[in-house]
Image (cartoon, rainbow, N blue to C red):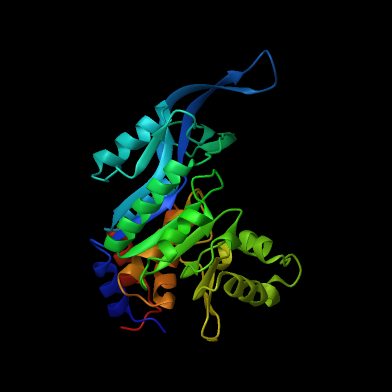
Length: 338
């Protein structure tokens, strides 16, 4: 069904494509420690910290993946005036990302997901606990006007738009409409953790099974394979979108298009021995969106996104997929037509 030369052509065409990313940027913090002893205060392990990383998470991870794949992400978001935000801004600007569309405000604390991992530096490390520092951003009328104008301007220049809604208030339906209304047939993709149906008129959505079932109000616990199309049809009709790409973990992905074509089931790429699923959904939508910007069909974009997701779950932490890694996966896939 898929031809290797065509997928390689799309992968090359991804380079230099501009994608506006409107979403919640999250700080993914990983604190690493080596086991020291059991505490006398409580039956818990004491770790000696040796490393502390703050990485781009949420919509920031989608931004990072677009960059790694050769695209040019244009972020539009909000961050606090805190140490985590400073590190994220430094990380993006050092990579050449234009951060002028990121608003810094005192009243908002940058959402931070803190993961504590134990293990020795040269061995596998296990996540022991995670805690989240969360806040909600309430946009003012003045900020809304500013964001609206910015999104319209960026959409006029970019090849595609990506909406990454993690529920922290940065993304609103009113502001997202500045992308969908002014897209002029350019692809707009959606990843929304809790409010999928609040963003109609996107080109495509990329929920996981749990998110899709919750949005459609249809349980997949029993006969999930039989009801997945019912879920996808409900989402397509509610969103009035052209395609829904549902990620299914170890079962790969399922693509449902508006034109009545049969669903395309794409088996998981690589091995089912997953190292870390952190941020895999961000990699999927970044690859999918960038492929659409490069002229791919929804099926071709889904296939490439499947490679991206399969590669990134074999890496620890919040990781990215490079354009070279994507090309290598295509070249190695024996099931493709030459």
